[in-house]
Length: 155
Image 1: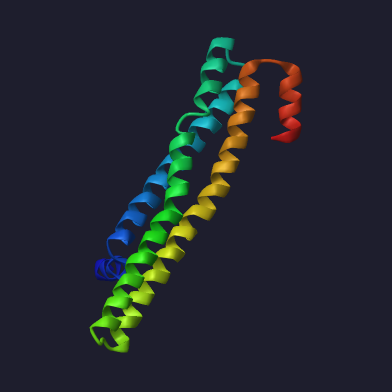
Image 2 (image 1 turned 120 degrees about the vertical axis):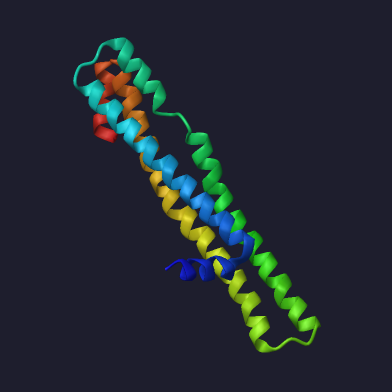
């Protein structure tokens, strides 16, 4: 199993390792935020004191900026992998390389682009869901019945 992972990482070069680290970071941040927001919603709906409600409602928006930055970075890293893969391809053409060397560079270019997009698109969907739940938590924390009923209809 570990040799397959090493082969997979080598297929995309250093960019592949950066994409893997970014995907792990995004997964951790999204999971942590979802758990915090859902806990805040549950506590707020159980009738917590106003001070506790407002503290949880503010917490719902924490780390959203970092999550958004990671989402934007994933396709850019994929693009960087594309450029490095194409440079390898052109280097092999200049040195009179064989088709195998050329296909290796093209493969690296396409794989890193694919992985960058495969990380960013689902993460963007989850970020939007998280934002929606955070807005619900903020509305519940406000304690305003009118805002709550509006949020229940939209969230």
